[in-house]
Amino acid sequence: MSAEFAIDVRGMTKTFSGRTVVNGIDMQVRTGTVCGFLGPNGSGKTTFIRMLCGLLRPDGGSGTCLGHDVIAGSEAIRREVGYMTQRFSFYEDMSIAENLDFVARMYSVPDRKRAVDESLEKLGLAGRRRQLAGELSGGWKQRLALAACLIHKPKLLLLDEPTAGVDPKARRDFWDQIHGLASQGLTVLVSTHYMDEAEKCHTLAYLAYGNLLAYGSPKEIAQGSSLEEVFIRLMEGSPDNYES
Ligand SMILES: Nc1ncnc2c1ncn2[C@@H]1O[C@H](COP(=O)(O)OP(=O)(O)OP(=O)(O)O)[C@@H](O)[C@H]1O
Ligand SMILES: [Mg+2]
Figure (cartoon, helix red, strand yellow):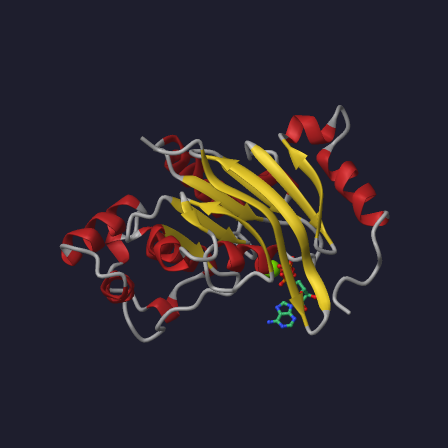
């Protein structure tokens, strides 16, 4: 039986050189749901995601991710999480299948050959298995990145702007995949700047200058107006320069 919340953290905080970039964030994400993570550039989304999956040690905060303590259990968390980084990269001179095999080896996936074949099949990559990763278009690279972060059968997907620079058809296919995975019980936290994608999420978390300004279903947050209007208003009420 899975726990009610895949992510259940409080007070998550990160400071870089005296500057707090994630400021006491509380977040609960129900198992099997898709949570959209929004906010202007530099608001702390990537930093938060990296703390959740044990790649970055928080300066404050507590809670659990997939039932493991978010600080002491970082290794267990890493094994059960699929993380697609904002600037994913592959071995460009290796084929799609070779790249997936490499990732499977990293995670010590049992019966690697089968795992790679299944993953190629599931993501519609089988016909291109021998194509070099470096020759793929953006949409296919993104699909390969998703396949790579699913190969060890994670319970939680952390996707950091997975559809940036991808055409509308590929984005829609990607979101169909995401919802298909959620309906099988996977939990997804996905950062995006696209409002049409935000509307497809079960819940949304809106971050600005490290603070959580809004949290709820798209309907609760929009309250009759459009999500875009709400987020632009929130942005206008925030300090101008997040990056400095
Ligand atoms: N390793 C680091 N050292 C110092 N500052 C950092 C580091 N990582 C991130 N920052 C700073 O923390 C702030 C938050 O960055 P972060 O990448 O988490 O934002 P983001 O919401 O993911 O932005 P974007 O939408 O552009 O991806 C930024 O001001 C960034 O410059
Ligand atoms: Mg980011």
